[in-house]
Length: 172
Image (cartoon, rainbow, N blue to C red):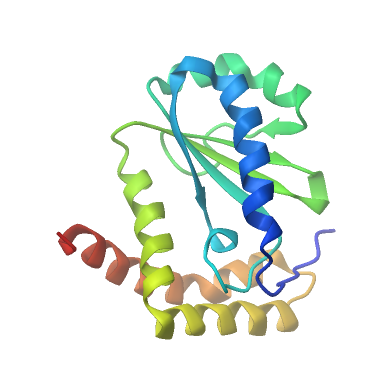
């Protein structure tokens, strides 16, 4: 059973991202355009579950499926789209997850959605604080109920995401 744990921000999360991004670059090769650090561990000062979210942007999503065995060799379990159309999702660490990989093809609207959320929270301290506190509150309330934790923050995530997308698209 996965425990919901929210930690204070740790500088090491950036190093963990960089090390894993190098592994993913070797697996995906010339298909990868760039790899972004997303999610709460990418936002300085944000409280977060200690899971590094990586978002490789690729030229051809169909080619990613041929890399499932190589991903397995570096510790990942492939989950296909896992609820988001035109994504390939991988997780590492089983119930003690350490990394999530969200692969999208260049041009996907989900790329901007993730980057907008990250960048907006990096620059808007009030929403940064609200989101951080909500996660900490829900982790305390639902320490062994990941679904309730996720559902509990859903309305705030949607609210912030809408503001973030508007801000991201209009920032010039």
